Image 1: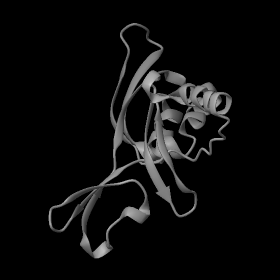
Image 2 (image 1 turned 120 degrees about the vertical axis):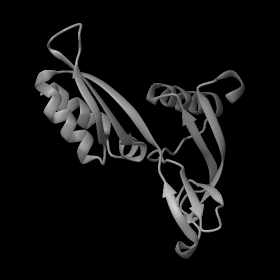
Image 3 (image 1 turned 90 degrees about the vertical axis):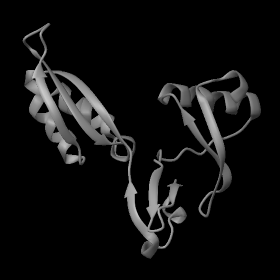
Image 4 (image 1 turned 180 degrees about the vertical axis):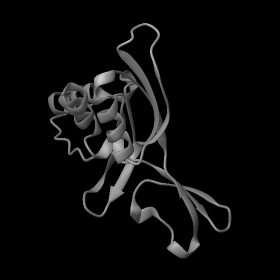
Length: 152
């Protein structure tokens, strides 16, 4: 399926809870739903989906770098120097009425406000630039919270 669908990436994965399978990546939720439907229709396969997870970079005290996909892949805590988690640089254009709610949401998810300024095209719009940890965006229904805060 990957050969004719560039929106899908996958690699073998094994977990204690689910056994052998594949870690799949999609360009978005729509692509995921399309691929699930195709797998069901074309191959009669039921797909188990889990919350997306994020790869972390782990640096050991011996200056070795590892990529870890889940906690079972972590080395012993005494060997770890530091762990880096990926983040996104979010650019949000919003109406002035929603600035406070959106900034509060970003900061409550361990985000960091970089800057904000008004848009020259329309006096009612604002740009907010923030750094937000990817894990929190993908795992905690960030999109739904974002819609809720920006529509009320």
